[in-house]
Amino acid sequence: MALNLNPEEITALLKRRILEFERGARVTEAGTVFSVGDGIARASGLSRVMAGELVEFEGGLIGIALNLEEDNVGIAVFGDDSAIKEGHPVRRTGRIAEAPVGPALMGRIVDPLGRAVDSGPPIEAAERRKIEIKAPGIIERQNVTEPLQTGYKMVDVLTPIGRGQRELIIGDRKTGKTALAVDTIINQKGQDVACFYVAIGQRRSAVARVFETLRQHGAADHTTIVAATASDPAPMQFLAPYSGCAMGEYYRDSGRHALIVYDDLTKHTQAYRQLSLLLRRPPGREAFPGDIFYLHSRLLERAAKLNAEKGGGSLTALPLVETQANDIAAYIPTNSISITDGQIFLETNLFNSGQRPAMNPGISVSRVGGDAQIKAMKQTAGMLRLELAQYRELAAFAQFAADLDAATRHQIERGHRLMEVMKQSVHVPMPVAKQVAIIYAGINGYLDDVPVSEVQHFEARLLAFIDGNHAEFLRLFAEKQVMDDALKTLLADILRNFKKSRADHPAA
Ligand SMILES: Nc1ncnc2c1ncn2[C@@H]1O[C@H](COP(=O)(O)OP(=O)(O)O)[C@@H](O)[C@H]1O
Ligand SMILES: [Mg+2]
Image: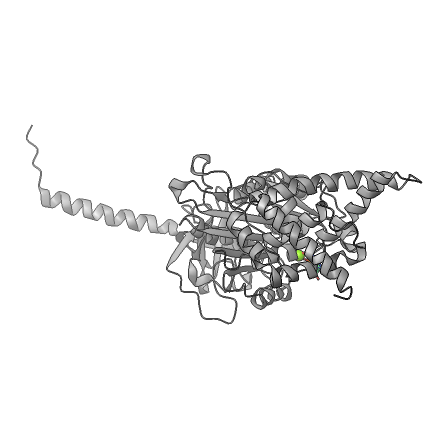
């Protein structure tokens, strides 16, 4: 069968087909807005748009396609939707939401799309990353091995956090959640940990205050603030944590370390609920959409410690959740508790009684961080935990008992002092060596004869005494990271000397 094939003709035909194909496709690249309001636009004609794709309205306003329905697309608008009118065109961009990443972001405040919102120049990042990607699989991970210190004695010893861990900070408003998270960022100074503070639904002034605190403590340069404030539209608040997470992943995936704070996920769920209701998705428990649990677990799974093959980098996450009247059994708190590696419970009554940080040591846990705790801390932690547990039990019982035996009284007295030692004010992170020194003093009875009201003063003087006269303890501690016999003897000597010098000069 002789078929007369003319190559030129075929080429021309193919070329024409290709051109026509593109033209045909282009029709579905744009659509028309048919309704708009409450930050949601609906458009028809965008039949090829992908879920999560960015679209552009007339005038450059950006939106994200969230609901793909048979004959229309629900779009959340990033900005003031009053400029969009029915009948306006809307175009695909072919891009999934991305954020700029890398060193150019350090020291800056940006919105969830990575645009500068401080007074600095526009962000010139060399790289952009998709903000919603899959978390590393189990094979690519390893257990946490290095500590991520908060600088708070109580947290570092009782609920230690490891690099790559997810530790929930949960409590009512004004219990010190933000302070704990911000101070953890401050404590990463000089540790080669890039920090990200994601502010969701807060007042602008509160975000400015956090930045100012970081700046004052020399921590702004290793931190990026991703801010979607209460005055920003819900879609922006919804995107903020993913965007911050992508920025942190840049460090994790290049063998470095990052810390991300989500302040807070309660506001994030509220933004998502608002968005979902406007998109007319069916509401579930507490009117939250059914996928809220999935939403947060997907986000928190991205915090990880990667294995050596993957570079050994880490992303540590501190999500904050605000409770109402201490109700940790509510929907969002229980969800969050179940998808993190531990939680720090902060309580109003402790806070108001002056026990700050207001962590309840009885119910706060860190399920994996113990593996990352340095040996010296682990040794101290075991004894402290036991002392405090016994103290709590006895103190509750002692309220009803008239006369207590000497041993019980002694235990309670020591517990009082240890709880005093647990107190620490804001923005004064303490290095591990000093944490161990004062806690060691407490559990070994060196504080038993110090009046409870003087414990904090004693501590301050002791640490100054170590700085001034026994810097060798700090040096040896850093070297060994374990309280061996030599270090124990040294610390005991220091404590005896210090107490003697106090006895000699009671005013000191
Ligand atoms: N350990 C602490 N010691 C003294 N004051 C604290 C401590 N932690 C927090 N605060 C103060 O308590 C107030 C509320 O803290 P904040 O972190 O804003 O609470 P939350 O984020 O839980 O609402 C702030 O003024 C903060 O400085
Ligand atoms: Mg707060």
